[in-house]
Length: 179
Ligand SMILES: *[C@@H]1O[C@H](CO)[C@@H](O)[C@H](O)[C@H]1NC(C)=O
Ligand SMILES: *[C@@H]1O[C@H](CO)[C@@H](O)[C@H](O)[C@H]1NC(C)=O
Image 1 (cartoon, rainbow, N blue to C red):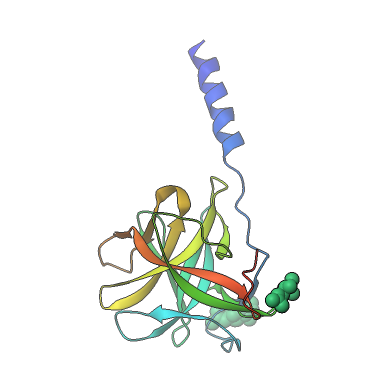
Image 2: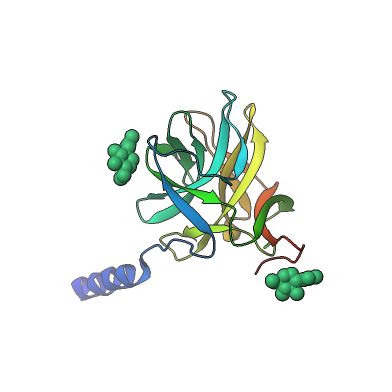
């Protein structure tokens, strides 16, 4: 009986673990140190060492997550809900398809029209790009609407959670918000 219950639970867990998917609404270009920075890459802020960071994304485990890409070193810094990490391969967001990208003020996981998702996480939840000023930088972080906070953890710095932050939004050039 106990075994059967465990089996059912295990099957349930497998059924819940959906593979993450990459966003395809926006144009993302593969990158590493060997690639030149794409024209129309989108600046997201700067890190505590004064390097500009571009909006990127990485695959980490079963999650697609926003990344802070420092092109001088070919490093994509990112964080999960709890931990920071970095990778040397990443995608960089580029402004194409007649869209422009702007950072808009937001709060509490409110859905902003045109908000840019990098993809989904293991729970099939869309993961958005947020940013906040912290630790001497302007750092791109991870926004899960259900968590209602922008989560930022850079390298060994403390885990930060902001209920007020900026979120990356795509707009048509003529001012229409892109859906
Ligand atoms: C970057 O990726 C290309 C294509 O996959 C590969 O040939 C190159 O060695 C990579 N460069 C670095 C620095 O990883
Ligand atoms: C802006 O562009 C969109 C998509 O091309 C179009 O549907 C909309 O009518 C345009 N709006 C204006 C005010 O021109």
